[in-house]
Image: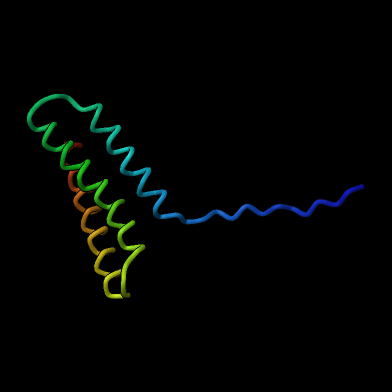
Amino acid sequence: MIFQPAVFIEKRYDLEERLVRFAGECIRFCNSLGNTFAEKHMSGQLIRSSSGACLNYGEAQGAESKKDFIHKNGIVLKELKESRSTLKILKI
């Protein structure tokens, strides 16, 4: 009988992957919206803010200092809050 140790799969909290998925889902959602002026405007806003959060997180990974890292992640948070507000508006 051959002994094989149990393989433990570690569930990682990969924020970059989650931000990429969020931006992609927002784009997919925006593509399903109608064609009115308001829907076009809000969908553009959502695409910019959700993808901006993802892209700025990537920028933060290359920060030149701790202060720069904190600043860039602050921008990520602002973009995510903007995305949340846009989604709330679209829900109405």
